[in-house]
Image (cartoon, rainbow, N blue to C red):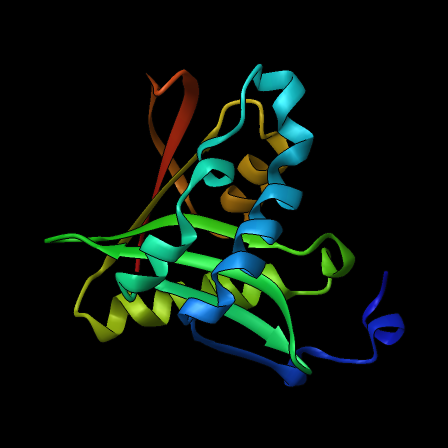
Length: 159
């Protein structure tokens, strides 16, 4: 679905801190976004199992909203010397419209605001589209690991 079909453009997208009322919608968005990987992984990716009420209560969960609809989510965790982008998901109806890039840029601005010059993230080895996407945004693979039953690829980007 294109932005013209959704009747909004990127100028209509607001990124804001999620609140407790948003948690059920964020959970549903994550489940929808990661469902495509369940068969290939043999289990649910971690973002599908996350407790979004708890994440929201920590104050590190953001969402992208356009005209009252939540169309993206972002979980950021500040570490001592870098920002961990723990989860990013975009509603299927707006994929390819720039919402992901907007959230990635927001992550960089959050790192800078905290005085951090590095962002780290990880993705599943089978998530080839995600891997390509992060690499086009300047993220570099740092290492691979098998954790929590998933093969992960870790990326970093110096700002």
